[in-house]
Length: 447
Image (tube, rainbow, N blue to C red; front, side):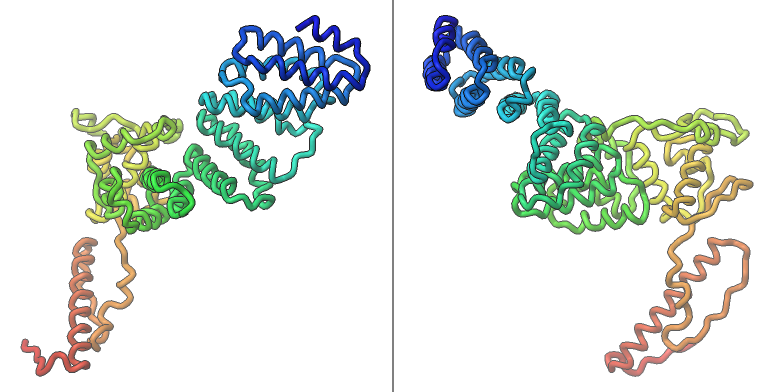
């Protein structure tokens, strides 16, 4: 190789390009040769360092084309050759930027095929560096940023992925490519998932599960991801709406997580065995530990004054995202079962200290996710039911206003009396409607 290069260097400028092209083809005609990597190193070094820039660009472009067309079939050898050529040309990147970008793109493809996600992302980052002199179109940058985000998410580097996602978000208007836009939306859902914005992630996954261009199996995975994120989302009205949408989706019945979805939607209390089974389907970031603030830890201390009799839990708060989601759900579900509950009783239900149970209930009430009041003197939590029918009580069926029952001072008795009055009024309204339509005749009421 050295002899051939020396002879070419003595030729005139017009003859150098054809001579280099011939030597390149001869070198790559036996790609399995043990010396091909060393020969290409010497060849590219000579081409880059010779005086004629036009010849250098032309020959280096041919090198890139031969490599892209599979002149070297062995993946490991090709990776080593491309890395070597990039390192040779990099000091003169100002003159050979287009060729370096093409070589780096090939290197990124090799890394991605070998599932070396972080290395592939690093190479692509160097291509789309903001200081690059090459002017990429907005569509090309958008496509490149989305690819970087996908690779970083595969490596579970959500922090850096979000940086490049924000750049892509500014350019989303620049492309009409459906594949790129779908990849962008999927990245958006996954970043919300990694960022513990589970409610937002569930909605985005569910939306993508309806896209016909996506493979059926992938859509099923997205639907399952939507269910998982909905279960992990903070309990409250917003999550209830998402759960309702997923529960009514007929495809959800076939999912392995349908049991926990239905119990969450129907406000059933979840049992440890069901939680353990669901925990096995979660990804590592969804099992992340959560820290308890010092204020919450202090407020969650057991202050019952009765000591721990061995049956009271010593946990001062949820330890994982799943823990918190399940505890908040069970607290919300208990509000549909009980009129009131003691701090100790709620703690036993949630496997928390009484103080920690009170803290969780207080936060949910403050955030509008739970309707109720806390009586710290009697150590009770009073739950408020749905009273939207209260205004209509006693007005149906022409009964007029129903007299208020005697105030017994017992809230649960008042609620029971109210429910009886509402039921009687509704029955009277139904009978009156059937009578007006002639469906019921000679109806008489005897005392």
